[in-house]
Image (tube, one colour):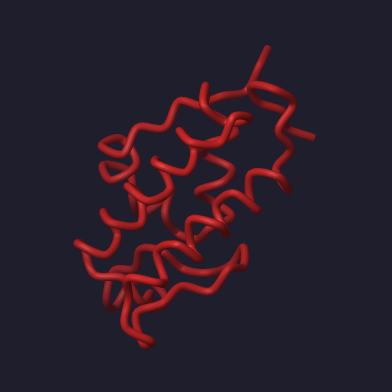
Length: 111
C-alpha cells in the first residue's frame, strides 16, 4: 500500500482526482467530459493508443484543476505535483487516471 504525506492511500488520492474530474467537467462540453474511473484515458496519440477525450488545452486545464485541488486539500497540500514534468512524460503518466495516481504516489512516497 502506498502512503504519502499524511498517510494518503491510493484510494483517497483517486477520490481527490475524481473531485478534479468533476470540477473540470463543469467547464467542458458533454462530449469532452472525463469519467471518474481508473481506466479513463487522459492522453492519447492518434493511431498509437486508445482515443482519449482531451485535446492539449483540455489536458492542461485538467492538470491545473487537479493541482489547485491538491493545494486546497489539507491532506495533500504537501504533495509534489509538477505539471511540466507530467506533460513532458504524458504518454506514460497520463495513459489513464490510474497511471496518474501511481505517478503522484511514486513521486511522493515516504521512505
